[in-house]
Length: 372
Image 1: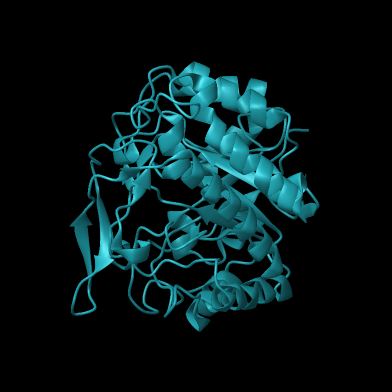
Image 2 (image 1 turned 90 degrees about the vertical axis):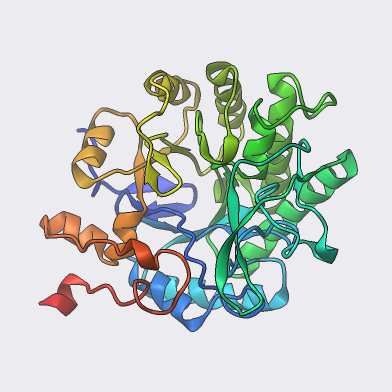
């Protein structure tokens, strides 16, 4: 019998009651010291009916921050703040992974230790902006400067930061971690030939450009165990200047390498979205690449990318993926699984409140029960 969204699934050591996953969603509402707030606790608690919650991207170090009001997992206060989130989710019978994040070049000196330049595999212009706090405490978009190229010692230090962040996440009560290797951030910058012009062992060949990701995976697995580790990729993504000359070969190599690790799951973001916008110019080779990844990676595969209930059910029935992550629908519908089960109307997301702000558009979307 073919699975649907309400077919239970074993995911590593977890038993998911459904295959409806809350995607990682940057909301820019962390408090002082980049610590989750009481509102954050309520936000995640409300969505504990998901088969799995993946937290918003959470920086592994101060160097890894690129946007205002995003949470970290590298200080004692941050660990304590996240422990309250995980406790609330578990009390509500939910399950939660933390997404580990280093933005790499998509940053600004205001976030960097000592006001230095952001780091990247290669020093080259970045086609994008980041969100910083101005002198009056307001969030504003700012140009990203040309970053500094990481040396090997710097790369090794970041690998160690990932491993420590994973330990911190488990100390904060998380059920596991998802390594953010997607969406134009640091690991993705190493993977893609458009952003990696290195000539050392971390650049050039596909094996070399994949090396940083695989070293991070190895270190995190050694720290907390493979069944608690997942990876997110965006093959053929174009966000923040990404692009690869041979995506079939590059992501085929990565899928094969990750298949040998025994991860909890591999999370693939389809290129139908560009950030939060619909991408109408994505490469038509995408479908063949996801089929290739599905063939090469034998473990649990999660899909994301603008799915609604009908498309998600079809993807599961066709065997395209095993679980589906929903983003904007989960922002607006804290009880999304219940709404899907009852084929109930969905709340519309308020795009103006996606990033930053207060409770409006964060914890005030009505549930079916509240609306009744």
